[in-house]
Length: 169
Image (cartoon, rainbow, N blue to C red; front, side):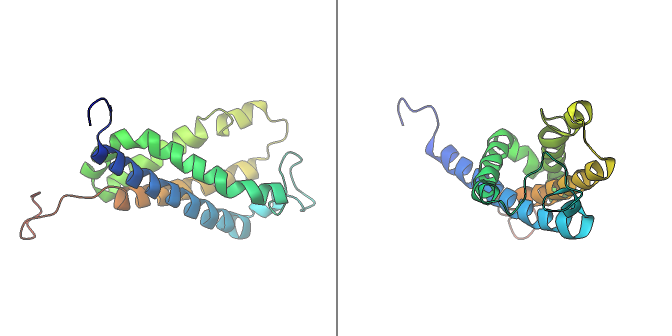
């Protein structure tokens, strides 16, 4: 491909990788979000609960319902684009360690240290109950770990082995 800076195999790899991250983000967001609402007690902080935080929208609000899926797709795309250059290293680390690297990156950069993330909540929010902080911390950590596993396990094709010896062809 003369004049085109990115080769077709790289684009195919990018599409596969980001596709897995997008789908993984969307699935884990919803499953872990439901877990947080039902088991961890996050529902106590969202409208229509009488103990809801004033700055949170009702999850059943039509605007929330309309935008939550596209928002998670965009979030997954951004995570995928940022992680893509490191995909081979993720594979080299193996599923467990690769998953932990992805999870740690998503958790720390995407939640704890992010502008508008955990640290800024403590600094700037006038109303930020520590129970809510603990629930969201656990929620996002679980989601990041499961997403990390999905990415490390499915987003990159591993080399085939010769006669089951584990050596790449």
